[in-house]
Length: 226
Image (cartoon, rainbow, N blue to C red; front, side, top):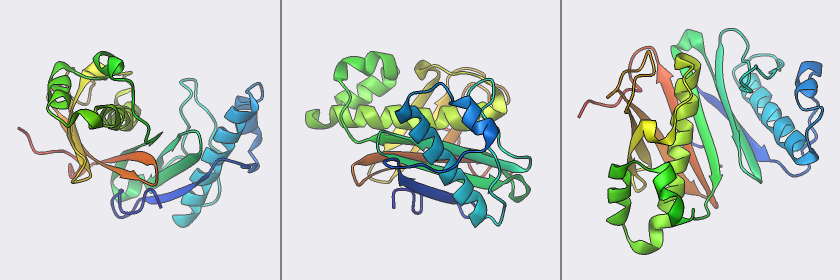
């Protein structure tokens, strides 16, 4: 299991392979991908199926998840959630607002190295300095981990801020051995201010890099200030 133990108690998850996924879609969901290629429809269907499985683990009915104008899932009232996939796997996580959860973030990537020439696009200057101090043979995979953690943090903060962040708008502290990371805002994205930090989990397992994050109204998701 890719997600086991990554999310806090109270969050329910589901994951599956994408291949052969033919789960039925609600009409409003099917309309969102009516003109998409087959691979995209399979990814979309698998993601919605995972989300509904996770909802059922919360004791909720398998409700529709239409696509919003920003292409993000529109979650039912009282629910927060997140969906991610790579070429072969998909997963979803959901939680109840009544349990104090404000937003969730999830990213799944294949554990294949990124070309080091992309470091300038993905990393801040501080992250590039950190990469340079790591064993040379690990740079490409660590760069993929930075990419995944930032994608996770972007997805988690977006429902609250409505702000589309660039890769240079967050700075990461990455601890792969400890399966954790923190993301620091380098610009305001209200309600997050420049300098605010969020804590997440990250792991390399079964050929995938998986990053997970939750934001709660009790502040337990916030990393300690530096």
